[in-house]
Length: 328
Image (cartoon, rainbow, N blue to C red; front, top):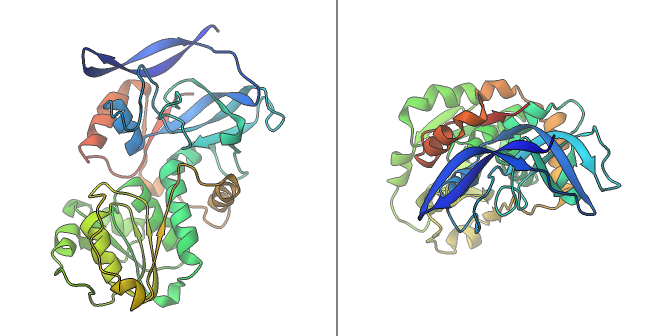
């Protein structure tokens, strides 16, 4: 083959348009691999790139897709052989490097993880960057907070990171309170493993005091803003809060009281450049002790022709759970 199909975003007269195009193969450089992509998945960064956000993708035309799972088709790395099943998540994939919304993707070998045994390529993309972020958050949280310490609260609960966090925590025996702005999704969250559902409008109405009544042993926050502020104020002494998102706001208006009077720890989660040894640890857990019924998360399986529609819905906050792009 001389070309392959890719979902391309172009800037035309100040507007960003998408289409499926035939793309030529490029020669591999040293320590690069070519992956025949079986599955990718949709993340908010993909939606931003699709919309032409220059903070995510500087130059267009471009192929989004910050996740990819497939098979090594060609290798110029001693680490990988042709035919090996692999996955790539985050780094610069799909941002300023052409990403996984294509039949083939060329990437540096040091971005690539061998697919663990007992984990399929499809399962890996149901997890994707969202699941990797959830896994990192849980990994840091459970270092300190144990199931007997009390309830863990998860914000943005119907999103990819939130829903997978609930599933992992439930698997590990934690009680989980889920915060959501979607009143119609209460049963969905209970089915995932949440023991309590808190409506965002109620949680945001909490009074603006330096400390609130302690209610939670720990938290995984995916949205930032007032929600994160109120979570930190509501965590038990020596509780742990992980933060990985800023969809609500990049601002955090707090006193130091939660940290010095209750000893609360705030841990930032950066999935984009997370060290490889920790990535491999998280992926191994997904294949073993964190092995989940991923279909419980009701992933939507789509084709390349449906990408524009789903990305637009994601921009409007109208997708729940995970959406997986099938290419093979």
